Image (tube, rainbow, N blue to C red):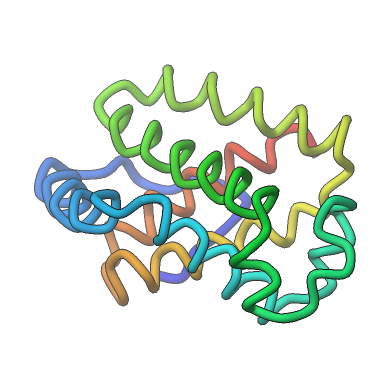
Length: 150
């Protein structure tokens, strides 16, 4: 299932949730490194996205990005937001509320182009559970909610 950022997706089944939790637990064990690796891959593959992060200006190489405390801080926030979504899979109202708040911030305060949510979600999915339809469905749910204020 390709990741989408509009419309709706079917609810996650119990089997999908269990598979997501198992895969995520392995990735989240080393969340600081994993988060930085994901964000570095995002910025090196999508350099135009870096324009939305003034603190990352001048960080042109993967090593520069990895060494930046600002990048590490933001990577941790992203990983923890996904972790919150994984923990909230059984309470979609809670997940929705948190992600809609993030959507408002990104749309109205940071003016982030929403197309990048889907790109980043793809990298997170490929890092966590490559080709897993359930994880891609969760990433779609996250993208749809993050796009809600646009």
